[in-house]
Image (cartoon, rainbow, N blue to C red):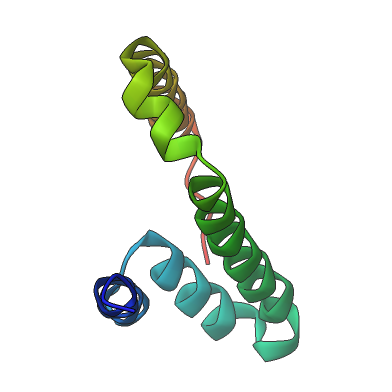
Length: 96
């Protein structure tokens, strides 16, 4: 029970603060409406639940035991974000 309180506090803060997922859902909902945004909301909830499940099943322990995997994942994440930034920068702006 003592380890549940930090998790609940983190979940509350992560839900209420405007991170990239919340801003994406807000802008998508404002642009396309509730019905079109529900799959996005459900996908974000499912992804968050899968991350918690993966860590609960031992992924965090594996990353602590094998730091080279964590470094490789960090490099892959940096490459992915760089590619996303490059495609956004090169993409033409569309008028609203």
